[in-house]
Image (cartoon, rainbow over all chains, first blue to last red; front, side, top):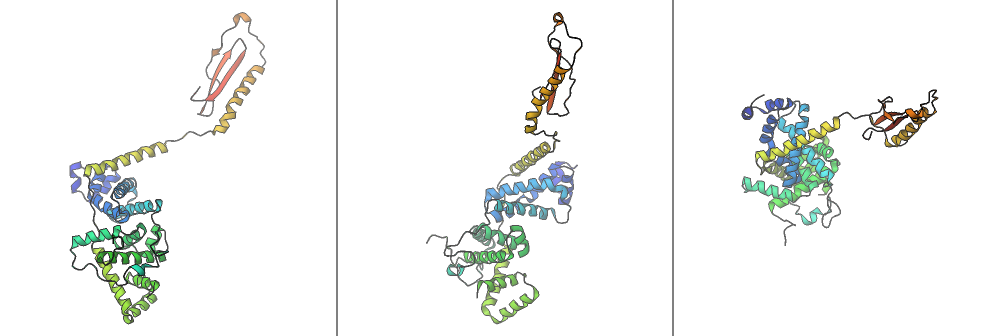
Length: 201
Length: 165
């Protein structure tokens, strides 16, 4: 078993093998390497720092418990990401945060949007600096409902197709399409600063 | 353009349509400027967002973050160990409720009614003597206690919960 000072020089695969032998120091090194990535992924979905922190830590606990099942068919980070996302989706489901709240002047997410969002799609991000753009995307995501943000995040950042999203979230493919369209449209509007109905008039 | 068509164009941009539908939407974008504009804007939006995923870093030290994980692991392992401890065969309380007293009565009756050809003289009367367990319970939750009273020429067997006897 390598000394703790050697851990940083080991690859993820070597650390995983050490974890399978019960070496918790190796697992600590894996946590240190990937903790920000897992936290960021949890945060994109739940968009609350404390929740994302708790969920990411819970994911690591599950990771340790299931490390024996990891067979290396993907990278360790990919495997951990799957655990993290599943935990976040379960968390939202448990707290019934997949429900879409009625929009003002609309009985469901599929109608009424055109009444208060401009029908024009523009590229709203020209001339923005990269870091500023990230900040604005983050802020726009925060303004989406959990239901809309989850679908958008899974599609754009986790590269999931409609069918996989539908299965993971427990909604129909039609609802995935509808929520994704609404989320993109709202995001684009917010990024462009064309109109933000949440700003005080 | 209705919402259904907008979502079809979105699905086309995302590569989610089958070949025939994809061809139909591709043809539409050639003939309908609004459909083409929507498709282009969707592509542009997708590209920009995917290239700029919001990043977040944990605002806590490595030790602090890890300590909570380690505690969680240890707690889970303790719980798991407690759960996996083999349990003794449970005896439902409703069975014990009547089993214990009826066993006592039955055993006492057996010894009282047993014919004894050599009654003990009065002068030899002695206090009840605790004897070795001669009746053993097959259940871990139930214990027995046996003693012999020479005054009454009777052996009594108490049957009760193991934690009391």
